[in-house]
Image (cartoon, rainbow, N blue to C red; front, side):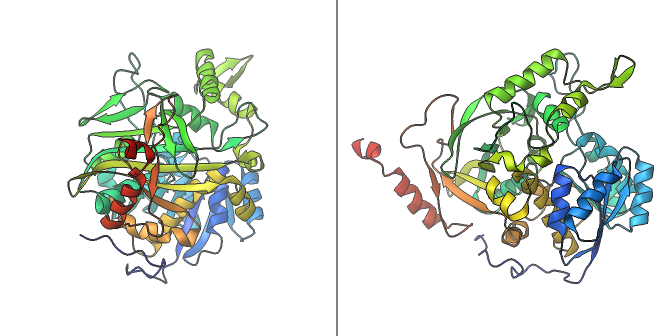
Length: 469
């Protein structure tokens, strides 16, 4: 099967229902929710958008900032009955969940009971094993709650698209694309989140919800290896991953993430990992919070007041939505796939890159919020046009990757595909890359031919070191 020729989005040949209008209820107007509200402005397929938040003041602030006449509502994201009533009142066709993962079950269930489509960017939470969290799988894994209701969604004829952000989300789509077009056999999938993005002027700050950061960084991470899930310790197995765009090697560590659980369901591979470039100082701060019990999510009594320690840390930390002007550099999320094509070893790194100065200058949004928020908006467009659909609980790699990647140009999403020399992207931590460690970028196309790959790989391998040998 030959890969498709990528053409101007909208002209790819996929059948589209151009006049279908969709009403959306956006639950949560925090850092990413605010970005989504801005990105949705002026979309031709969007009917009515209702912004809902626990703080009506916050929802109104975002609506006023966008200036598109959005409706606003107050809602408790943990109250499924209240959410269901709001879905009916807003006449929503789809619920987009932009609150943190602890509220996923309530929002998910409300959409199911109301009979509408659903999208989130992070799945329901895991519950680690109490006695041996770093050796034994937890009794509940990421997304298990939602997977358990797959048949109910199928019987309702509605789609619940879970984990449709940047990662998980576009990272899954990269893996699906590799399986569909680039490889005959996939042996390993490595999702890597890093770059050279930094927040200046703060000793400790996060680019999205601190609650979510603590949850995914301090929970036991998972690795898919040899046909089963295995548990690791937080921040384990450090490596230097060679990021593109001239960034080079950056230390990455194991972090709990959905892709490791989702991808094995549809893409056979011997090894699937997710690692995040957190930085040594950030890792030590999280470890200290854990040692002191300040990462706790259960309320404790403090002089007669019940408060969760994690909420105290969140209240002391800067609001991620306000940090855009302090961010410098680029955020890169990509999927390194290893395997074989026509009997030859091959590795590709499909990635998305966003520059802090560009997103602040063009959209007045901090880069990670924009990078995450644009993905579910693109997914909604494909659902509205009838390109993506079906019923049940699905993760992004279960849907056709091509029309989504076709849309990237329309949304100013910079996506690149590199063909890399096998074995030279992941290096032992702290070890300097060898002189010939480099990525191979085939420019001008997102679906390079074997001939182009071969020529580029041959050119990359032709180095003084090789010639001496």
